[in-house]
Image (cartoon, rainbow, N blue to C red; front, side, top):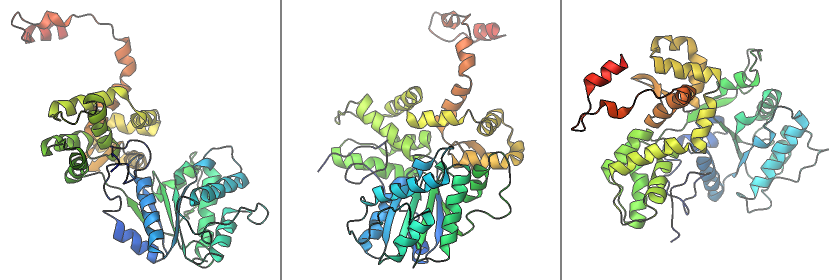
Length: 391
């Protein structure tokens, strides 16, 4: 058996990676929507398992033999200067290129792109659907990579084709990204200009989001390493990893991978202790991998910064005036709202965000005290000296 590992890059594959069933919590709901020929939204923060879920769902649908299912990304059309014609062409070509990962039957594969015949994404999907023997299920990833009029155009083309499904348009479509459909209008008109009262995608039947791993699921994931190697992640260690990460999938995998490969150097004979977990947490914060860098980049946005600062200052009563901004931060996975109120999404974010926001101040502070001044001969902390100097 090929050695598996904790994945921190790209979608997970069961033959390569330790992973849980990505459909475990929403499988019945998604299948019901597809069988009812519905369009729906799947939104969740980055690196929380969306693409893994989509690939698993598409392969399962194709294996069942009832549908033609494809996952493809529209990210290639995700820049502001692109024309509508070029955006349609790039999206169609992305669909064609990705289809080989999911479809073995040439009769089901999307047709060759003809720029004269297929003047739009809508006309291309209509042509494919009309000539395909099975209902088509499109799982359209990175939808909120699109900007302004391109985003509106794609949503309206899908809405226009909705009425002719399944004979002349895909039977079911999932739009997948960071945000729910109610925020697409904000993304399409960031300057505040209204799109009108109607949503450009008012045909969606339901919106799903992905949940973090609970404590038991973190243990189930870590225990796969124990089963493969004999090296134990004890329930106590697993609970501590869940405590620091709140079950955020990338963080759980990143901490486990760092422990195994960096700290213990793949020596499976060594014991995994609580101190090692704490060291892994500190190392992740200092390393600021891609996941954490993208989080830090978002802190430069005004609507994110004011929510984050409000949490740090304890201005909970003011959140009613920040509803759209708060929802944006929740969907990005930066903060969470539960029965205790609004807070940072996990302990690692809680540590790294204030450090980042105060970085400039930290760098300009000139040390004017020597820590050893505040220690007694018995190597104890001299609180009176410390407090006096602080005053």
